[in-house]
Image (tube, each protein chain N blue to C red):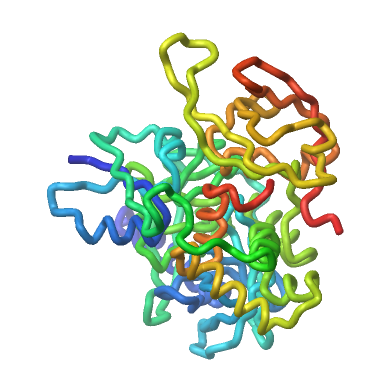
Length: 124
Length: 299
């Protein structure tokens, strides 16, 4: 069976680990809309379950400061540049980024941005 | 005999191309498995954002095996390209080809293996298409796809034409078996912006949204994906245009938006300052508002 995997990288990796050999993965996408756009000849889209609560929200909400850091993160800024803009230390930014990725259940900043976008946490 | 000589000559030419580019292709060690990067200027390396971890600090290993500290200069959430600042990097910078690649051209992909040795594959420029929504949430105006096989380490590698000139940045992702390559001209443009400003200019509306499925306004009985406005930032272009929480956005500037990422894609730098139409459903009724796209991070 040919499939496309849909979800954040971490979720998809978890899903991938559970696939058996009969599944041929043709692509990996952040959203179902993306998967459809790619127009692959797949038999199924497999949606990776998200590790947070069942309604798709977060188990622990982001603080106001974390949301502020997240906005800057979504602009592609480095930690250093975020620190300069918000007038806080690099170390504090590092701490916030660790907390943000932890709460979003992701491991890096690119996944954090994707996840937060889908949750409506970032104003575009 | 002459035939064999021409084959040997072709083979040597390819090896020469790989030799020539190798010093400008570095290994990038981020949080995950090592990938590749291209020297794109004085002490600057272009790579893919997928190699980045939570923090700015990374390492780059050069052709001669030296490990250097690298700092994230900035990355572009729309293209997934990232630029690293690497002090003490002496390697020569590459420049993109000014000649447009053609489908059918022979191409060579060059990257770093996990042990930092040079690795090369070859194939054709198989498809030039786009704009295409491709791997891991990325939208790029034009995408090259190639028959050259590429493993994980090819993320951020060089894609060269038969003259040895850079025509793309390899990604190690594939669709239907053909590896995805970001055209060099687009990559270098992004790199220049990241090096200069630490970010790429993006448009801004001031809308946070979540995907929602509603009844298709055109096709009876069908559903369509749209964006539910969940927050309007005070003082933003969206507030000025009268966008309300609860509005459902179907189209922006004549293009369907089915996810927040679609909106992100539309907010390109060249749209800043332009007025666009937002097709909305407000309480089920169609409403059109005109909004002038602002600039993200203009402070």
